[in-house]
Structure formats: structure tokens, C-alpha cells
Image 1 (spheres, rainbow, N blue to C red):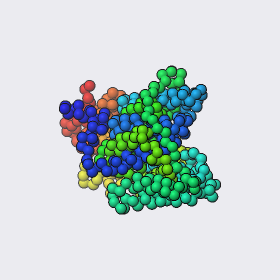
Image 2: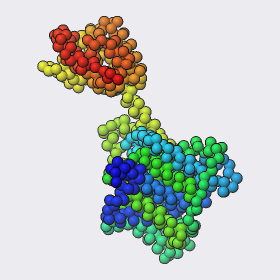
Image 3: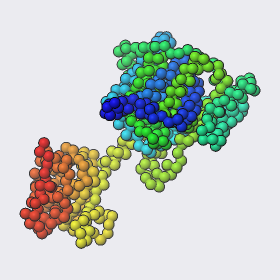
Length: 583
């Protein structure tokens, strides 16, 4: 097959990259993870569907075809796609605004919402808009995942203790409710949960490939069945509905679309940001494959198309399920295929097997998985190394913890963007001095004993000159000029680190040079990069500064100022300092 065609096929169908090279050693981990997550998906899918206002069966439909489609089109090998609590809540809120007249109409709106989410995400991937995740810096991801892990862990406490807790994403509400209901602990349920945690936490010490989560599920079912613990008040999964999904179709009514598009856009962006943040965190532990944000958008979009046409509702990467999937040994998306097949088989033949599965065991699986995502070392490390990144991590952590997962991830992206803007608006600027006995110039604030002349100010700007930083640059240069008490006769701009100049930067440079020359300070430029020379030429700044004031390096500018080099010698290298692109 043509190499270019093969490369393109692997880009759009990531399964073709890992499947032909599948290792037998990965099979045990994939099977263990696939079965464990598949078992988790049965009660989770049902619960999330009810949270979205749908019949429980539609939650199971949402983890069959969508899971298979993502396994084919997605680039993450551990991400577990399906219904999640936040998307379920957003789905319910969005459909409620349409006031559906019947359950059938409600389902139609849910299918339509899944289709719109798929359309938006697929379109974003096609037009390569996955760059939005570039605003998720490592501190933001770290703060978000640690806080989200705590929120999800606390949400499982009600199953672990069998107490009544509100469905909330706000840690303060959850902790308050736990304290208010702490006296209602069901000790047998708690005991089963603790047994599950011990098995999952320490089972791996028996053997690296020991399927600890699966063992905990089996032990939980055995305890409930053997001691008839349901009569003692232990909560179990109970009846799981049967039947495979039939082909469904979303609505193409424009009025419905107008109402649903805002919530579809919210689910698309929040779902993708959350999904990619989780996928990126897990991928960092493996590093044997590469995540592609654009292909992730396409994979999630196709998965939502599958949900829309097979009785589901909007899906995305699940935080807790992905953690469980990775913790249980998933190495490829074969684990997701196994999970989907297990659910299909369960729907057809085996619903009765999970009847006595205690909810406390599922809570234990989630709790152990997400506990590994809480990072205590990184904040301490950043505190010592980078206070700005530490502040961003803590801010994202606290916002996610107190205001919810979707607010946390969006706030983290905004914080990342603000930090980028702040840093870009305050570029590093160095005043240069000459190293004695050489033609080398260095930053006077870093090195002692440099040759510094009162009649000359040599400045190096490390970054672009554009609308966001021109005032900062001008203020810094004015400050240095004031320190020289009006003795400066020449200002030399070292432009070797200037990468770009926008229209505002060009206009301001013109204004500065005009003003300085009026006050008796001449201006020259050195070491200008080709693309920057092209910009200066377009704005007639090269001509304005003067070809005889533009030099190939700092020593040439200094020699010309001191009149210790003749014009012929300068002219020999003038072309290299001033030439622009003829185009």
C-alpha cells in the first residue's frame, strides 16, 4: 500500500496503527480492564440515564455503539467513552427548556442533542480546532484532575456508607451532607466496601496481572448471595433491563435545533476539554502513543453520532471509568471493545448475573482508581520552582472543588490564557554592556564588570513587539534613559530576539524614534531577522531609521557610532543587515 495513503489511514483510523502490531502480552490487561469497566458501565449507564431524565436502558445503549466507534476513531488507548454525570445534567437542563409533551418526545430531543454534539465536535476536528486544548497547561490539568478526583470520590461515599447525599459537584455541600448524615452509616455495606478497597488496593501485590477490581466484584456478589445480605439492607444493582438498541433517528426540526444548539455547544466544549484533560493525564503515564486533539474531536463526534442513531444520548470521556480502565490494566482500545461486547452479551443473556452486585463494591473500584489521580508532589514541586504555575494549579483546584468540574476546566483554560497574555505583555528586556576585551555584549543585570557607557544605551527585546507589550517596553527604556540623566546620545536596538512586529508595534516604533531624535538621541538597529525586516520594510521603518543606522551586529553599530570603521567596511556587510524579501 502507498506509504502516504497508509499514513493518512492511520491518522483517521488510529485502530489501524495498534491493531496490526498488537502484543499478546497486552491481552490479559485489556481483558481485565474491559470486563471491569464493562461491569461498571451497567449500573453507571442506568444511573446516568435516569439523571438525564431518560429510561435506564438508554444509558446502556449509550455505552455500546459509541464505545465501539470511539475505539476505532479515537487516539487515546485508555479513555472510556460513555455517559458522564455532568453531560447527563446538562442534557436534562437543555431538554427541559423545550417542555417535551411525552417520554417519546423527550427521547427524540436527547437523540437530537447527541447528533448536534457529534456535528459540532466532528466539525471542530475536521477544521483542526483541537488547538483549544493548548490552553490546558500542565498545572491546570494537574489541579483539575486532583480536584475532580476528590469530587468523584466524595460522590461515591453515599454508596460506600449507604447514606443519603445530594447529587452535587460542590465539595462544600458534599462534606456538609456527609457530616449531617454520618450517624446513618450502614455498617454491613461499609464493611463490604472496605473489603473491596483492600482487595483492589493490595490485590496487585499477589501478582502484577491479578485482576483485582474483577476479583472484588466477584467477592461482593458472593458475599451478598451467600449471606443473603439484601435482607440486611445492603443495596445491590438489582434488575438490569435486556434488549439490544434499534436504529433511531434525531429530529431535524430547525426550531428544536435553535433551542438545543447552545447546550450542544456547551456539552461539546466542556465534554471535549474534560475528556482530553483526562486522556492527557493517563497518556503521560504510558507515552507509547501520541494524542491528537483534532482526531479526538472526530472520535468523540463519531461516538455521539452513534449515540444519536442507536438510542443513546450525548457521551464523552468518563473521568472515573478512564481511571479504572487504566488501573485495571488497559493497554489498547481493545479494552473498550471488550467492555461494549460484555454489555451487549449482558443485555442479551446475562443480566441476572449482576443482580446481587453491591453498589459499595463499585464505589470501592472508583475510589481506589481516582485516589491515584490526586497529586500531592506537584504542588510542592511548583511552590519551590515556579510560583506562577503553583498559583494557577491551586486556583484551578479550588475552583473545580467548590464550583464544579465544568466550571473548573473552563476557568483553568481562561487562567492559562490570561497567564500567556500577561507574560507576552511583559517580555524580557535586557540592557546590554560589553564584555571587556571582546566584541560580545551581555545583560548588565546578570554580569558584573561589563563596559557600560553613559552616552550609549543598548537594548535587547526578547519577544515580539505588538499591541499588548508596547507600553511595557517603552516604560522600561524610558526608565533606563532617566537613569543616565540625559547623557544618552545613541540608543541601539538589538533585534535578534524580536520574532514579529504588528501594526501597533510598527506605529509605536515610528513614534518613539521620532521623539528620541527630536530630543537629541539617535537610534540604530542591529541583528534584525529576515521576517522582521520584511515587516519594517512594509511600514517604511527601514527607510525611516536609515540604511546607515542598521547593522549586522552590535559591534558594527558601536564602531560606526565611535567612527572607528570606514564606510567601505560597513557597506561590505550592509546587504546582510538590510535586505528584505523581494516578494
